[in-house]
Length: 122
Image 1 (cartoon, rainbow, N blue to C red):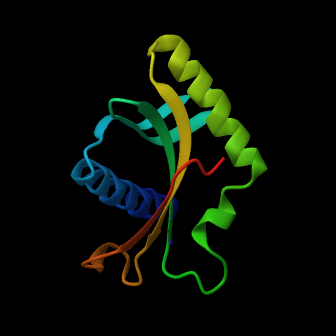
Image 2: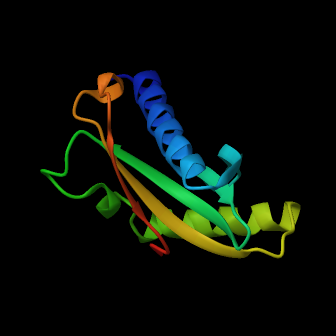
């Protein structure tokens, strides 16, 4: 799989999670937000929280759960990126860091990917 294919698959997974969050009443304020320290896959808000969500897409959890790939280094990059975001876009909402596992055995052809959403993951 090429880098471009991986990016497209990743964006597809992020859009699946964004749709899932919208159904749950969240408003997506940014997707793929980038800064010099990294990227935040999704930023969503409700009346209480601003959530920085890391999305991990896998075909299955046979090797390891998708959340296992959000290691300490990735967590730190997301935290620093979130701090920069909050400096630029101030808010009174409580920040939270979530992880969304997306399991899509058939890739983008998967009709109903399984989404396991972990609140306050780190």
